[in-house]
Amino acid sequence: MEITDIRIRKVTTEGKLKAYVTVTFDNCFVIHNVKIIEGKSGVFIAMPSRKTRTGEYKDVAHPITPEFRGTLQKTILDEYERVKDQIVPDARED
Image (cartoon, rainbow, N blue to C red; front, side, top):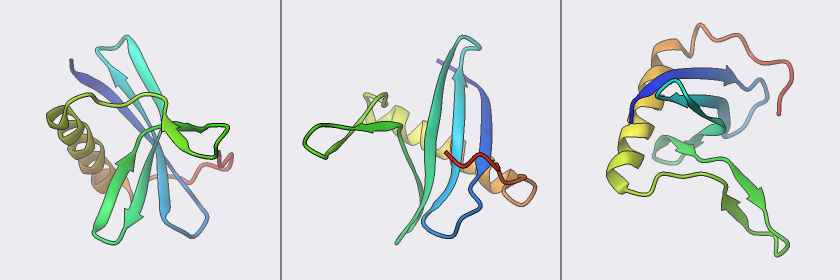
């Protein structure tokens, strides 16, 4: 599976959330709302999630293997670092 497109939308508000990402795989499957978050040890990605009835958040989509999670995170964060100063903040703010 190849990551064929990454689109990053910068968040304008202050806080840990830095950007939302849309990732396309093999030009035929897309995942929206991957988050780039500033943590204590640096930035990381969080997969899209929804709140359950019990108040927990569960991932809607996520990598199954640690190897692919690492590849996905590295690819997204490398692209974020490359373009973060050029990204126009998204006025919609999810």
